[in-house]
Image (cartoon, rainbow, N blue to C red; front, side, top):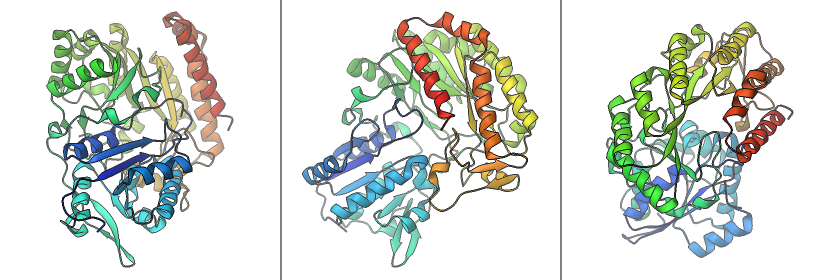
Length: 474
């Protein structure tokens, strides 16, 4: 225990630096902002530092912690950049050994025991949703609970790592306060022009969990149970963003936005009824987008939809447990095109069991669909997914202790997974071929140029292309 009584605490939440391929495009850490909102509702004082847009150098970090005097520090980060997160934890602990450091997020849920074994600076690892857990940890710091009474954490006891089991998911996420965006440097984020039509733009999350069983999906944070904010809650948050931050475009960053047709219809109807001037894009499954819904979404401001297509081979879609068909993909993309909604398709190269001919089929399928954009990633199986188990019997998973940078779907220098019949070199060659064959078609270039509305858009597209293809030369 580090505190006693029911005094209000200072809580510091940190997202360390991101150093990925497209690090210049930044999104707000809504996960931390939701935690902060829950803490503020209990009258605790919260400070968020975001290394994606702030320079969290050693001197700044030490001074901030010394001045703020947090009773607890929370850290989060992506697997591919996790070494930097752990290095920050060690640096903080060395300077401030009495401040407990809590680690949460997707990587924490993927490797909680390993984290505590490898990183002595981290005191507690939170798995799953964190809002209830962080309040329980504060009760522990106040002396009102023991660690074993807090579900959803891992901690050390003597020389062993102890798990308290899973925490029950929040059944009604409408009870959560909106994310504490006022604690974020909102003006410092640079939204991607591929995700936003107008600026300023930002992200909104309207649901948690996904009821589908895709083999590659890591669900240890929000689970399979689909839980939603009500249409009224969503509209209230949109109005808040327009009023307080002059937001013009929203990316609904749900795992899949259109699971519940009636809820999405109500959101769109309220946008129209209340004359809310906003454009938006989102992620969706092709089998949860009928023509009627797409038409209503377009009328409400939807300009683009990101689709998880994955492959141009039905056998691979079946192996990935996508639950969709090639015909459904073609129909949905055609409907979007006819309604004037742009499409961006996600594809994988190197799916277990696929041949080079199958990879060519995927590339040709992407071109035949007449998508506005396509993204081709190296198939990267994460521990805890069904795909990881499949991959172990269809190739070689090459991961040594601490090689977290291999969890890079763009294609790390040395790949995490190489399927039978492939080499790392060939996989990356086919990935580069996919990007180039899709984007360097004369008919595609002419179509994109005809849709550009300004020199600024042309510049963004050009710089994005330079950044993309320079990545293949690393």
